[in-house]
Image 1 (cartoon, rainbow, N blue to C red):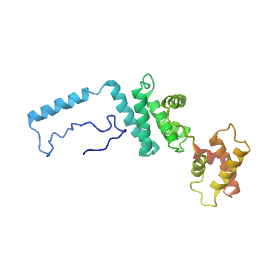
Image 2 (cartoon, rainbow, N blue to C red; image 1 turned 135 degrees about the vertical axis):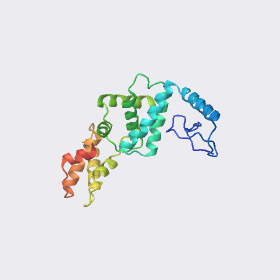
Image 3 (cartoon, rainbow, N blue to C red; image 1 turned 180 degrees about the horizontal axis):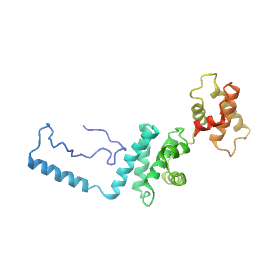
Image 4 (tube, one colour; image 1 turned 180 degrees about the vertical axis):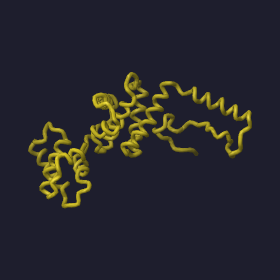
Length: 220
């Protein structure tokens, strides 16, 4: 039956690859004539991959590598692969730095899966160009037509207090955030800044008193 189709491979895993083992389906060694034929077939297959197609293959392989660095799930990798493929098919990758575009695509995929990975975390771990990274991210949001999901404040608060063992500081922080939103104190401010300030106050009220630097590092 074969492997299922997957967007993580440039041909979606539907093509047949001629391996280098020089053995047939029953694991028997090929004759000299058969080896020569297999070599010619491999060469033809390699030539059939266009230069443009190579950029897609490279992009998909980099999604896999960078996802390992960021510890991303398969579903996020698949979303990023679909976005990359759509940009490639629309001719929107030409003239742009492919490495930084891949970083931005992965960030976009994380936002759509509501995974609280920050902008700064991407910049630091992937050592990417901050200015181009932001520019390409806006470009992807503008052109892809995918729904945009901002980070849920609850997930960011849980990230701050993930290892807290005293009381329920998450609930206190959420109540502070809700009050700030109700009285329009949070209007026009960064969601991460609101979460950081609320978490700091919640930690004091909970008797932990986390430093502002520690909270910033957790949300960074």
